[in-house]
Image (cartoon, rainbow, N blue to C red; front, side, top):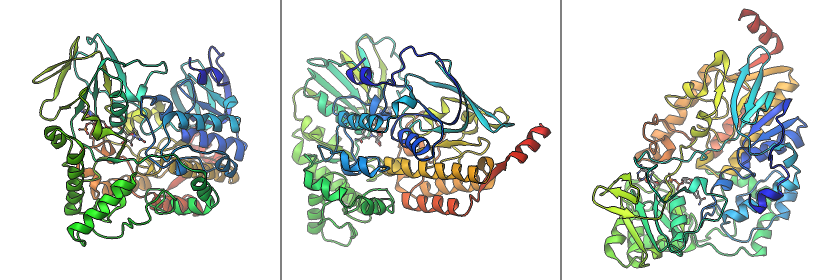
Length: 567
Ligand code: NAP
C-alpha cells in the first residue's frame, strides 16, 4: 500500500459488508463520480454511496501512474468548477499538470469536501438489477454489499478498460508485462533493462520518452505514426493563475459555449497571434509556414487551431502533415527513422499528442523505432517479441495499446434493466442511449461520460459536471412532481443514435481507424461513440430540461402499480 492509500480514511481494508437503502449509488471515483457525490449529497441532501474498485480516488488518473503521465489539457481549465472556494484555493505548478499533481488535487478535493466517509474503496460492483415494481435498483458488490437505491449513476469512465491485443504467447513471456492503463502502485525499476513499449498514442509517447532516460535499451513499437507536437510545458506563475481565477465564472461560461468545452483565446497561455480564423488555403506558403511555426513553438493544442480548416479540408490537412514532416526531419538525425515518424493519415483522425522530447529521444543510441506496419508482431515468446522478420529479446514489455473506449467498462458489469435485459446485449451492435445519459429499458440508470455523450471530444471535466448537473436536475424534477422514474422514449433514443452516427460519419474522425468508433478493438461493432460538439449538446440538454423532459417517459407511482399488476 502506498502512503497515499494508507492515509485515505476510506480505504476499505477488511470492512464488513453493508446493506443499505439509499437515494443514489454512484460507481466510480474519478472526476465524474466525485462531482456527482458533491452534487447529490452536498447540494441536494440525498443519501449517497460511491463505490470504487481502486484503493484511492482518481479514476483514470489513479491507474495511469506510468512514468511521464501528464495531462494534455491546460491545468487552468482541467479542474472541477463546482466550488468557487476550491477554484480559488488550488494552485497548479505547471501549464500541463503531471499525474502525481492531479492525484494530489483529487485527494485535496476528497478531503476538502469530506467525501471519504461516503466512499467504499477496493469494492467492485458485480451486478445491478432493476426492480420494476418499485422502480429501484438492487446493486451487489464483490464484498457482499447489497444496496437498494432509487438512482444509479455510472461514472465508470470512458477510457478505463485497458485493451491488450490478443497476440499469442503472453503467458509464455518470462519477463515483466505492464499496461500503461494499469500501472502498478509499487515502483517499477526499468533502469538498465531492455524494454519494449508497444503503441505510440498519448500514453506510449509519454511513457517512452520518460523510460528512454533509464532503460538499457528501449524498442518503440509503432504501427501508425500519430500527429505529435510540442507541449511547451512550463511553470505556471501566480499572475497567470490569478488572471483566470479573478474572472473564472465569466471564462467558464465562455468555455462551456465552445464545441470542445475549452478555452479559445481566453487563457493567458493562449497564443494571441495565431487567430485560427483563416483557411490554410488562403495564405501563401511563407505565411502558412510562419503561422504553423508560431503554433508549434507556442505548444499545446495551438497547432490544432492554427487554421480553420485543418480538420475539414484534405489539402489543409496535408499542409499540416508536410509541416510536421519538415519539423521531424530537423530534429531526428536518422533519415530512415524520421521518415517512419511522419503521419500520413488525415490530421485529426487520431487525437493530437503533446510531447516533451519525444522526437529527440530517437537520437539516443539506446532507442530503436520498430515499424509494426511493415513488420507486424506475431507473438510474444519466452524471451520477448517475435515479428514476421525478427525476434526482440527484452526484460519488460509495456502495452500502451489503449482502451476498450466508452462501452468497455459498462459492458463488463452485469447491468439488468426491465425484463432482465442485459445492457451488454442491448448494446451488442453499438450503444443505444438518449443524450448518452439514459438508456431505454433501464429507468433511473444515469451515465456520466457515457457513449454518445461528447465527453471524450471535449474537456472531460467540464462535460462531466454538465452531465452531473443535468442528472441532478432531472432527479429533482421527478421528486418535485411526485414521479418515480424516467427513461428515454424509444423514438427519441433512435433519433439520438442516428444523430450521433450521422455527425460521426460526416466528420474527420471516421476517415481513419481510432477508438472514437471502436476501430481499435478487434471484433468491436463499428458505431460512432461520441457526440460531436459540446456546446450544441449542452443546448439540447438544457432545452430538454427546460421543456419538462420531452423524449423521456416519466413514470408516476400509479403507472408503476398498473405495470406491476399487469406483470
Ligand atoms: P491510443 O491512443 O488508443 O493508442 C494506442 C496505441 O496502441 C496506438 O499507437 C495503436 O496503434 C497501438 N495499438 C493498439 N492495438 C494495436 C495492435 N493490435 N497492433 C499494433 N498496435 C496497436 O491509447 P492511449 O495512448 O492509451 O490513449 C488513449 C486516449 O487516452 C487518448 O486518445 C487520450 O484521449 C487519452 N490520454 C490522454 C493523455 C493525456 O492527457 N496526455 C495521456 C494518455 C491518454 P494504431 O494507432 O495503429 O492503432
